[in-house]
Image 1 (cartoon, rainbow, N blue to C red):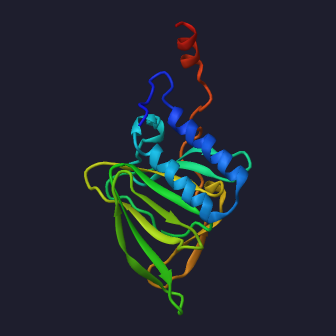
Image 2: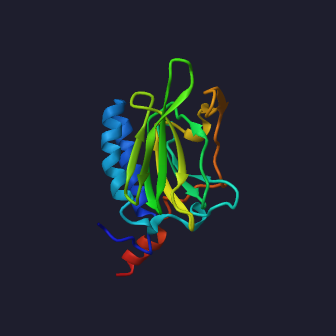
Image 3: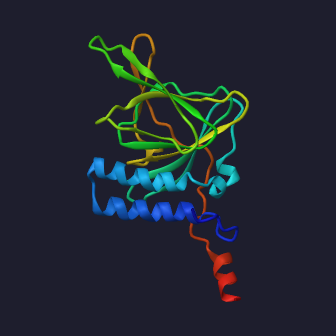
Length: 208
């Protein structure tokens, strides 16, 4: 594992973005995208020091979804989800492929499926520790509820989706009736990390 360079702390994220840009440029096969993204995301999760503090800040009342990067053609996006103690999502879907990897803390994920009468049925709860990755898509199963598995501190996960996820029309589901309601998540915060300012590193290399 290459250590995070203090002169270029966003290098791990930049490498991931470059990899994903090349990947979506050569294939649109979902299984291939998810398999190759899994390996790259695992490497990104190996060291958490690259994540900017303002993309790791919890909110006292609800989870945060910070945009880290969106492909200009909206073929993929990368976000950090920050969960305060006890915070959780409703049951929801994504409508596109996605991978969720834990960077700090731990998360629980309860998967659901649709019954014939429209109700949502739990398929069990799993726990993701640091480095753990969960995959979702309409092809393999797309409904879940996610929560911070820790009661004393925040947890953070890095999400990669096959679209500009903050602008995708998705659904939340009533846990009793299964009735669905449209939602568009948007993003927390007002800016993305500047992946392309490598000036400090270039100056340091020129001074050698």
